[in-house]
Length: 488
Image (cartoon, rainbow, N blue to C red; front, side, top):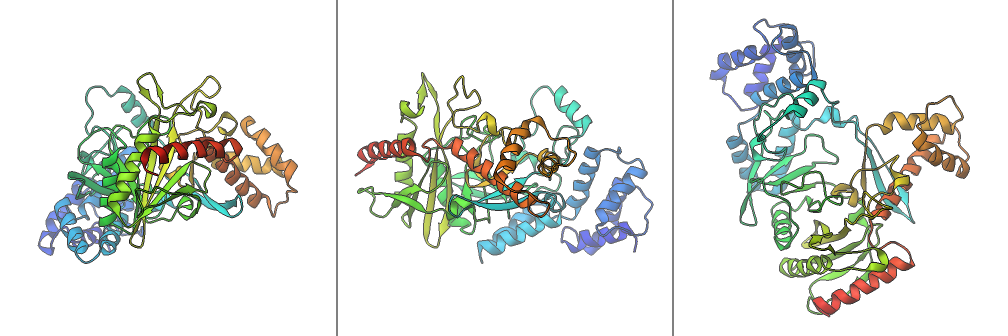
């Protein structure tokens, strides 16, 4: 079979066009790749069509041009946004699972979710501290930057369109040098908290069905009562998914503070499995179970079927924390008018119960810790220097791709083989050597476990109340003051 002929069949079969449209679809494809058809040799026709376009000089032979054309071709095989939304909401009438299953498969089939690239990520998990688990991902999925794209981004001036990578205007946007290709992006429209929101999947997912909920307007992130109302409303609509927000301050927040959005998906993170280690009683909220979670970061959990009480108590805790200081632990809520406190709020369902984790965050800096007192400390930067966002808070490390090759050299060093170990890893590697008898058979396991232990230390750095005597007393002071203020 010929490749254009095969892809035309795929396009019509996917429901975007009818058999009557065959000639029209063929000409749409030929306009993108060239008129001459050829025998199908690739399992995926689009991959071959992109190569045809390069040979026919329809596109330049570079990463960006290939990516743009790839997504344009898949766009032909994807229902238009109105049709996508129509099908999704028809399925929602039966069940949210049926709707999300269908939408996720659509986004995999049309290559918006880059399944092939995601498979390159290195993933494993390990135990720490009496059975707790942490997950490690070395991120290899995102393609290398195109030099032309880097140059174009550096020269960009004036108002951007779309304003950011999360804006609704990305849907169907062709992209180009320095701009994301989004021809095949589809966004489900939904109402959240009385506002127009969107729901899409992440192209380079870090876990199963990794999705993004986004305000349809480009407005800054903020954590307040409305956040909790929104999380509850999303959970009521899609109870199979967790949903959470990055913090709304630099250092402790994510990389997209300019656009209000949440992340979610179908994954049970290690923090969600962690138990409450100390209960906290709020007499004014008898329907809410509360307590401090046994976790390296400072997490206060609320559980209730009563979502209104959960929102009310959660809001009071956020407001109290935003003004709480403990100088003995370098916890300072304000510096003049500058606020330093916020939370990372995360919600999931346990049957009919809503489970809300409020992870306390502080973004103060000091001369000793210029990137953040409650941020990975310098001795850990050889592994993790970036901000601790929502995904890491829950116990899944997203580590830089550079580590793939660097850790291979560390492994050689541990085995006393010729190596080119980075100077930044030597002290860590020597410590691993001194604590283990290393062989070819166990070196991978030892290195993986050592990474888990580094990530545990990263989370401990980010915790405002440490897991030690001083931290325990700090928790006691905070809870005592909180209960006095909020309700005994």
